[in-house]
Amino acid sequence: MRIRIGVGALAAAVALVACGGENAGGGAAGAAGGAGKAGKSEDGSGSPAELYAFGCAPCHGAGGVGTQLGSALDDRPRDVQQVVQAIQAGVASVQPPHVPMPARGDGTWTDQQVRSVAEYVASFAK
Image (tube, rainbow, N blue to C red; front, side, top):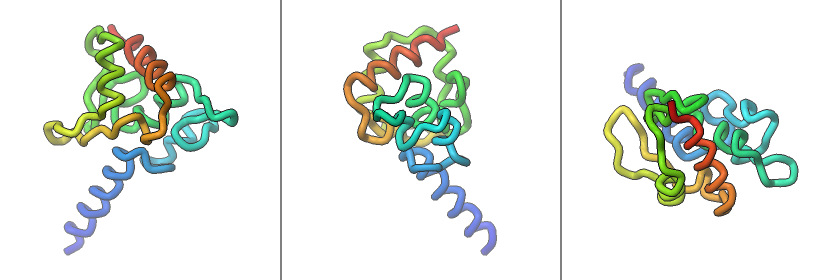
């Protein structure tokens, strides 16, 4: 019975991280340099690094190195427009152990924030 409870708690934590839950994944918002929800600065804009740190890094890792939850983003050059499309639409169909990616970070990113994060991700290419 303890194993089932542990697995359920782990699944809930993964879901929170995947959905951009505030402070999910051990305080990802804090890792964004004091940024608030969705990595937004006090003025609400959020730098690409802040947005990535909150909305993407919990699954894709710092610098896009990948984790068990999300694929690496630094493994090859990526077209900015394709990254924009993936961020806008999210990625619902993935192979385990990866988890689905929600659209637009926490769902509130503007078109400009999506574009700036896409350009930031494209800069990870090796």
